[in-house]
Image (cartoon, rainbow, N blue to C red):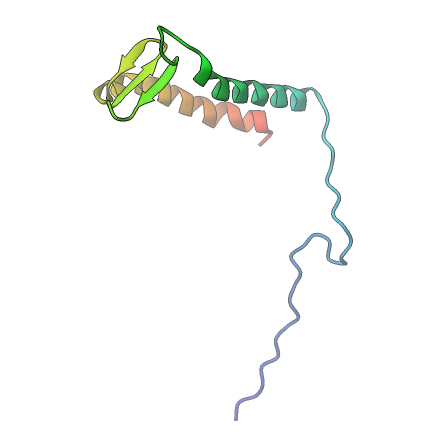
Length: 105
């Protein structure tokens, strides 16, 4: 005959095991402010560059139908992206070396 299995009580995975509310910690400081200002500047640049005109065209325009990328008057075709690969590799190196220091990891 099989015996009924006894399951252990489920473990609550919440930090507040007793049901009390979780309070977040407020961070302040120079590097926090620098990070927030830098993120705001990058967001402004990302969303604002679409309204920037250059030679009667958007400053950065990705023409999907024509298979072209226009960046500040320079036109890049798909075969030209090998020329941009050093920039992408440099960006990857920067992200993998500077970002962990920036984030505090």
